[in-house]
Length: 219
Image (cartoon, rainbow, N blue to C red; front, side, top):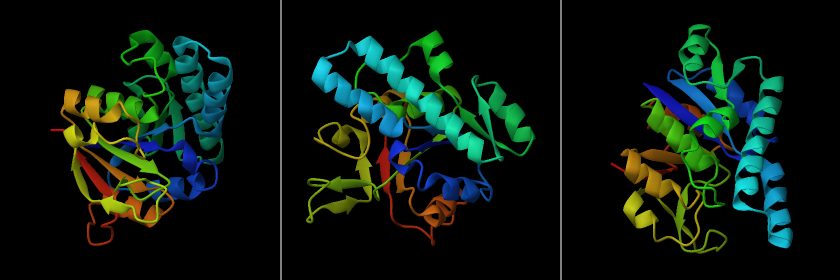
């Protein structure tokens, strides 16, 4: 089975190349989707000051994801950029890793709300549902926490139901993700991408090497 791996924009550029090296050792076939990183964050800041339309915010943020994807592929020869879902199998046959640039696909199908509540997390979830894949979200923290994520008293939650997550105020995933996990009957893991050994252990089903994560159940 394939795993859709979403590389959080917060991991770019500092941690991405080490992650891509670890992906070479994955026993699991993977498809990469990237966040928009600081480029998308700048758009949010512009919106807060100048109040651009939801449509413009949505599509320009997705264009930022495409830009980050191209930059990642430029530094990693084991990654091949693709724009269509049927290219995934073809790239896997070459023993390379497909990185999906989602803009054209999303423009064609337009399946998600145009809102800042929808980010690359939700897009990765939608892609996973389209290709019947598992979902792994890599971010710059260990997972989902109880309490304020910036508090010294926060506690990592190892397992949470997507229905419960709907009522969390702020987490390391976007607000729309739990709704989509429920809608598509998907589960996902959230892991800290700053530790490639943890990521590789998860992809290779070596649970003795990594127990630092959050599992979100949507089924």
